[in-house]
Image (tube, rainbow, N blue to C red; front, top):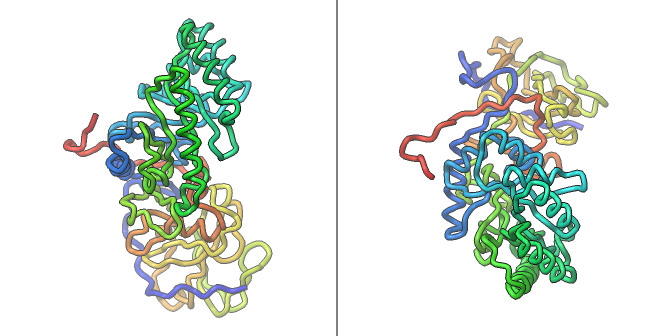
Length: 406
C-alpha cells in the first residue's frame, strides 16, 4: 500500500522555536478556553454555563482549564467522578461543582465535606444520606432521570419514588435537592427526533418533581451540541464539554463556523531524516513502501503518547506542508514520507523542524477532526487520549486586564 507524497517546497528550519517548545508538548491556549466560555455563555443566556472538566479537562488539564473557565464567566464546574472534583477543591477552586458518576466505593463523605454536589440516580441516595449524617452537614443532590440514553439516571417508572424519598430526607435536613438533570443521546445529530422525545420526557419528570414540592436551583439537560442548536433544552444551566475546548460536535461544521477556537496543539520535532530508495519498507508489517526515491521523516510520537495506532494517514505539518503518516504507527514513533530526494540534493535538512499533529487549523494546518477521520473515531477521543508522557504547556495564562470577568 502506498500513499502519494505531499507536494510543496521544502522550507528552512526556523532558527528558534517558541519558548514553550521542547521535544514534544501539548500546548494549551487558555485564552481560547476563555473565548469559548464567553461565546457559549452568550449563546445560552439567560441560562448559565457549567464547564465540564472531567477526564483532566478532556486532556487539557483540569485545574488550569477550570480556573480559566470560571474567570471567563462559567458559574459551575462538572466532573464525572468525586475524586476529580476533590482534586479541584484541593487546588483551591471554590466554584459550585457537580460529580455524577459513582460506584459503591465512591467517597460520598468527602464530597459532602467539600461541598461537592452529587448526582443521584437512585441507589446512591442511602449512601449520600449516610455521608450527610456522618458529616453533620446536608448533602447537595442533583436527581438524574433517564430520558432515553439508557445509562445512569432513574427510569420514569422509578422517578416518582426517588423524588418522594429525596424530599423526605430534605424535610429531615439531610439533603437539599439542588438540581434535576438528564443527558441527551443524539443532540449531535440535530435532525433526529429522539431529542424531542427526551425533552418531552424531561419536562414530564420536572412536572412530577414540582408536584412533589421540589424547587431546584438548576434544571439542566443540554450538552454542547444542544447548547448550540436547541435553545429549548437550555433551562437554567447548560453543560458544555467539547465546545469548551473549541471543538465542533457536528459533522460537517468546523469550530470556526460555530464561533469556537480549538485550545490544544500537539507538536514535536522531526527526530530523524534520511534519504531512501524506491521500495523502502516503513514500520512494522512493511505495509507501506516508497514508490520512488524519497526522504523519510521520523516523528517521535506514538500510541504510548495517545496517537491512535490505527490512524495511518493522519496529517503531520512540517515547515508549512501537511504530510500523511505512512506505515504502522508504533508505540513511540511514526514516519512521514517527505517526497522526492531532497537532502542529498543539497536542500536543507528538516531534522529538528517543528512537526504539528493538530492545532487550530490555521493556514491549512491539521486538526483533531483530521486525526479523528484517520482513526475512525471522534474528536473527543483524539484530545482526551493524549497521554501524560506529552507535557502540557500553557500559554495566555492571564487574561488581558479588560477581560477580567467575575
